[in-house]
Amino acid sequence: PDSETPGALREELQPLVDLATRPRRNRRNQVFRSLMQETVVRPSNLLQPLFIHADDSAVPIGTMPGMSRLSVKATVDEVAELKSRGVKNVILFPKIDDSLKSNYADECWNPDGLVPTCVKAIKDAHPDVMVYTDIALDPYSSKGHDGVVDEASGRILNDETVAVLCAQALCHAKAGSDMVAPSDMMDGRIGAIRGALDSRGDANAETVGIMAYTAKFASAYYGPFRDALDSHPGFGDKKTYQQDPSNIRESLLETALDNDEGADILMVKPGLPYLDILSRMRDSTELPLAVYHVSGEYAMMKAAAEKGMVNEKNAVMETMKCFKRAGADLIATYYAKDVAKWIQEGAKSGDLEGCF
Ligand code: PBG
Image 1: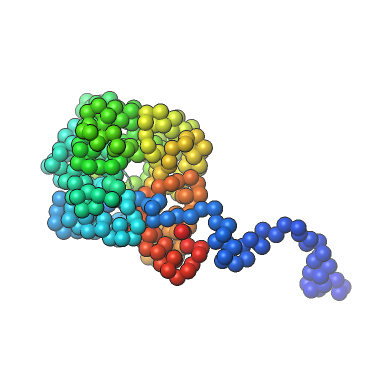
Image 2: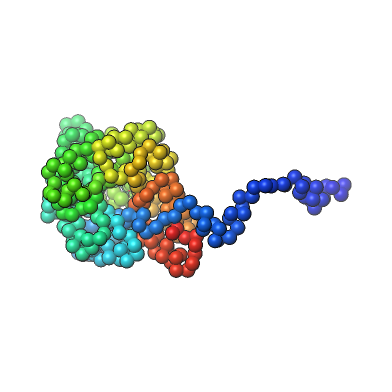
């Protein structure tokens, strides 16, 4: 009966635990944990998306707490602040007035348009900050699609769209964009844009890089972004050009194509639900990889944090680590400024387990 008391049972079973290897030894204090870290995130890994508009005042985006559409001037100020925190990569997304939208999205290659104007202003003030520009028609499309629409059938016309994307990329390159980022998912656009930059661009165009949205999925997580730019599809959805979340092989096909067509960085988008895609792509190309932690992921985190359901800082920092561990060199996130601040604070307080 005695051996049935809990204490006696524990004593009887204790000798069965006889371990040569104890992984917890390497986790026993902060110095060892920091030493063993395989993955660190630095501010230089971050890309901050910025929403811009032609108005003078900032307009908060309701579904993205903490983010606003900014004037060109305020954007330049924001870039200065990001730079002071070590974030030297920014990507611009414009809200275009309805009166400037059309099916062929001609405004997207207007050299005096919002994006070229903003690129010039940033590069004049901060030549050491790398400016990325999104290449796609949706902010400029009267149909709310990334490509030119055949009015009769509603089809998105691939090759006609690629010609416009080339004009847009040339326009951005001339304004001083360091990296053009086609997010449209038309076939063949990477090679065509590379060709246009090399043959039709000015002397500096050969140094302009291409960050391809290689594996961009037809995702429910883009809603807040479309609110920010008023760019919801006018009809239907984007499933004839963005990838099906069911699939992984077509991401590998797109990887091979963008690799061969001359892309400089390949991107996966959205982020957290697609870490398997990122990891598989890491194994199938030697190019640097980027991941886009998109608007819906940001909005979900903000909502949970506001309700006190997660610790925002810890959850965001963990997410950043996971992106890097899965294979991302560059992380596009609306949290970039906060992450850089948290890394700096961690460094100051001697928190060796911070993301640095
Ligand atoms: C436009 C574009 C989108 C995003 C980046 N570029 C939206 C879309 O494809 O509908 C989404 C980014 C985000 O949700 O944060 N081609």
